[in-house]
Image (tube, rainbow, N blue to C red; front, top):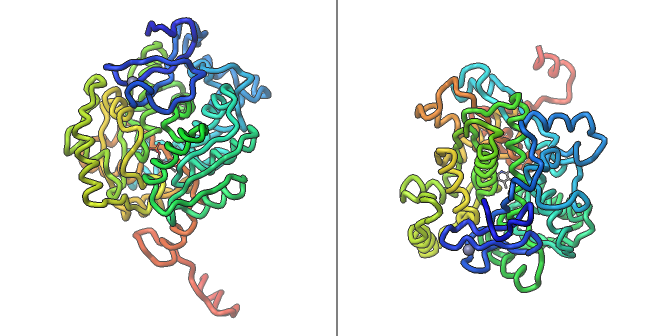
Length: 451
Ligand SMILES: *Cc1c(COP(=O)(O)O)cnc(C)c1O
Ligand SMILES: [Zn+2]
């Protein structure tokens, strides 16, 4: 970990080992200026007072009147030590819960006591994205940004708009046309972001926003931003915290732009290097069948991390093929309706670190899993339910054992996408539809119905 930036606690480093260029944390970059690959936020751990064991972080609970100790992200601040406290932008994110759930466990054929749901819908804007935004906005304050921007399938914009307001920044959101769930769109407008709707899909928005940010020197808040992923590492710290400082056997997470899976792998890698955990769990990353780039590339085209020497030819060929077919990602799980995931290479690193598996599930499987999660536990949005739908498949295949300890990440709140939920129940679209029962405005008939 020695480096030319060795004097600082934190620095940025290109993930491509053939390049490995290093940059100051004060530089605003969303790709390596030398080779175009992704950047990591890295640390010189010997310059940081990292606790000797993870349970030391629990001491912060006694001082939770300090907002940084209360935050479920900054409570772990030594593990994302890239800026001074005065820049940290917290609005109380990360008060999330890990729920052990036997009924959902039964649905996926898991033994009692072995399935946990990590519910990130409890964050201020209703999705896990707040974990990343609090970190990225702290960096935005560090570098003195005035205006920020993102492309979004909805939750990134909701979260960015919320944090921008609290940091006094202007926010510009790019969304695709007709591709955003109502709960999320309402948040972006209500939190006061300038919302630009591009006649295209998320992948189009993602390309445009990068060029707009380069041209107008805006601060980009998509998960290309290495500091966002630093915040998202804390989801893993909280899982470990709630398991009594133990590591599960598996983490199951939906994969869209692959920021979360990338952050999780980095979190485990660092904890292992620091000696704070003894073992790295396995990870399963779940695509929607209509947005299954990662599944195609890893399972069918054998794309691997390969010590950082990712075979870009495989990726270029696949993307050229998508372009030639004029392919558009399509799934009801709009948060993962992405065909060119920007964090692909970092995600490949996670698969390597965590001995990961990748799979895709159908929209029908997602909708039914979502209804089961709603009925028996914590409601969630469709993309979140891909985790449970994926787990069901992996247990059926024997990849995950019935008594292995599994944590599914529920990434967003049920109320993000009310239309889909209402349609599922009222139009009887699935196995768990629970439509309202119509009855005349008449006491006898009502009583008869309820007897
Ligand atoms: C953003 C998002 C995802 C996808 O996460 P990535 O980090 O882009 O893979 C999944 N679910 C929800 C609810 C999201 O908002
Ligand atoms: Zn580089």
